[in-house]
Length: 137
Image (tube, rainbow, N blue to C red; front, top):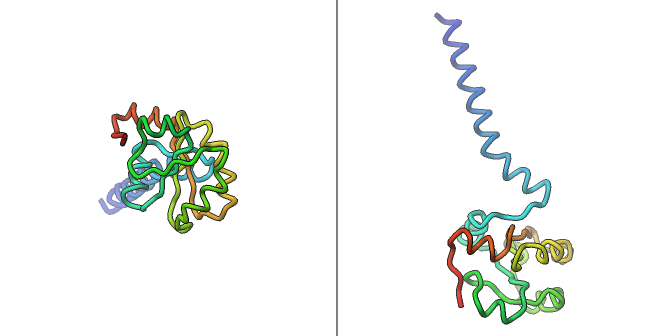
């Protein structure tokens, strides 16, 4: 009986480790590959981690609808105008564009500016809308 209890305990420990790894793997792959955030992850960064949001779309698209609290900087003037915002470099920063392509291209440039943690919104504003999350006009 004692031997069977030990096997049961080992099985439970193995199950715990495997399920914990399965929960942590998406986060780990995001950190390693530099993959952007899902709309749900971006919401967590904004609400819990006080992430700043920088929208890289043209002003007309930004005014048509943007993420709550987002600041608009056109991608061609990113470095100069990002300095003007005086954002806390210790807090996370989320770059957003229409589809996720422009923000991914700008990621390395922003990382060089000394922000501790920078990511992009995968799929951009289109993914945000597809997730039925609110836009501010």
